[in-house]
Length: 159
Image 1 (cartoon, rainbow, N blue to C red):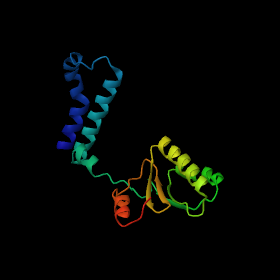
Image 2: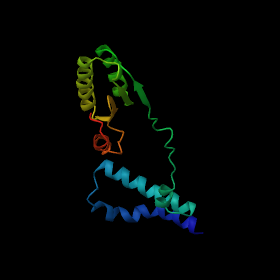
Image 3: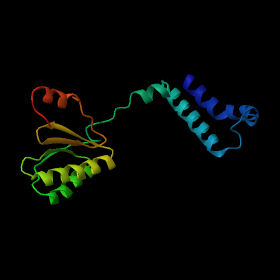
């Protein structure tokens, strides 16, 4: 019987409440009126189903696996012309591990300068992780182990 009372109240109580509604601050605003009507409808449906609408919202399940897939790219450039391909990986929000062992000293500095600029423009960061090896992360990837460089320097590796 309660189901029928809720449905009856939903449809026929609106005539009684219109006088009170005319004094409300949202009266005359069509967006607010539509939102209020939608909320009342949702509450009535939830009441008819035997629950409350807020408990129905809490039970939604979202599959996080399909929302994002992070990739790590290992690159070993030898010339400055390879930096463009690395920048394309960073723009695609991929983490890049950069190994500069085969690059000349002049190209090492140019590649690092260019990629630091690309990372900065995209909100990412470049961090040294070993001798001539760096990790470049986009803005959506965190880096744990901030003290790795200090640990390497304490063990005699100077970057």
